Length: 532
Picture 1 (cartoon, rainbow, N blue to C red):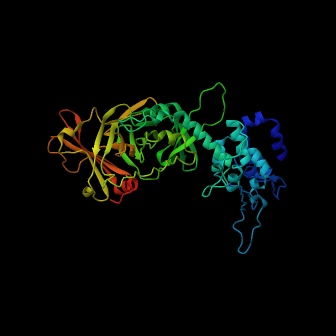
Picture 2 (spheres, rainbow, N blue to C red):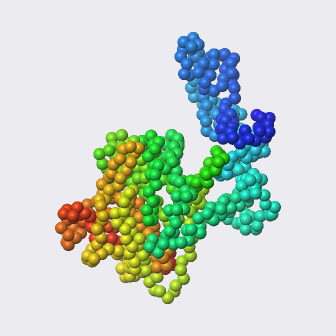
Picture 3 (spheres, rainbow, N blue to C red):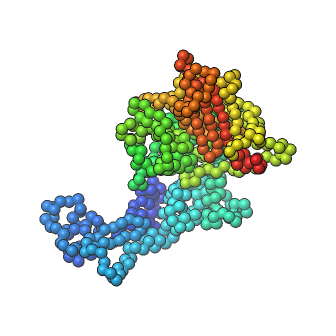
């Protein structure tokens, strides 16, 4: 085996082309149980497949060999757990006081190989695979952070550099000192290259939304989104996006192709942003960089937000919709609504295992204003579905006096029931269209809410994009309209939104007659360094 590995250096092109297949077959070879002797037959036993006389496999019938296994014959079974194997006998459990000798097979064969051989194998992997492999075990973490290995990766990507690492690039207190310095420099340089591509266009901030004007352009040019579904048995299914619907401050990503799973079989879902590589004439098998955006456990409580004749929609926060065929529990499609705030950074600057972490902004210094953080808010508010905008508006100079803080909430009244001039009509019907291959439909009384709340310094304070649905109001909320009263509610750890609506039968239209945004006072205190 070692002679074969060393000979691989003579054919770098062949090894580069098949490095993935080679590495997988190599690990399978390490985990395979060595041949053992069966006393009754004297033939080598090579695992599950040849535990019967004559080397017959379990799937073969009795007539194939004309023999049966003798009573009391030892049966050897293997269990793959790391690199351990266990042997069990048909003769029953061991007697009390007896001890079974540990087999040499229980040793970790991977660790028995020289580090040089393992590093040579790892040198054929791309940086993304090396990063993921470093989370498998302590040994692979140490070897995949080899400084010489990452120096070669760095120089192959950015060219040779004949200078020493700066002091700031060396390991400092509080960091993982086992991590290669060249590895940190590589990811720092890669992030810098990505920032150069889209940082300048994103500096142009829209005064209407408070978000960069070119967010849609940057996402369309550099990012696609990938969904990974994990089943109970550990199998993973990766789905590429089917469609993406862009709006003023959010995007709805849709997956419907290649989903052949039942909802209750899915345990976790992961959303990754995948970096688009520039098109070139040279085709490579190198995987694109993936940045984790969301990891969600489907065992958490879900809400049925609507249904039609074919499907029902299940909502898992934050903002994930499963469309499930009625009566079959089979997943037809998945939709996720993403807000534009820092979405480019989240989709490109994270890692396959860890999401992007936003830098901490220092609170503004203002000792003169006694109610800093309670006034000057601006709200950009949109109700939409996958195709049309139902309602869009911008509201300024929102405030809440210190005496009005109740139950730990800062209430910002955007649209008041008593002020008829503030009421808004909703264009069209509130419905959420869906599609699975050639089958189309729409679920009534559901839509997407995209909210962007800016503080008095025009910095994003709370941003959310999520599905929302209409429910009947428990009590009458309006005496000015002769219609049925409804409401839409949303709540998470960062805030609450309450909308009051009335349905006018003659106009066949909804009117928004109340809109209130509530913020936790603890969030305001942390942002503005106050103690309200």
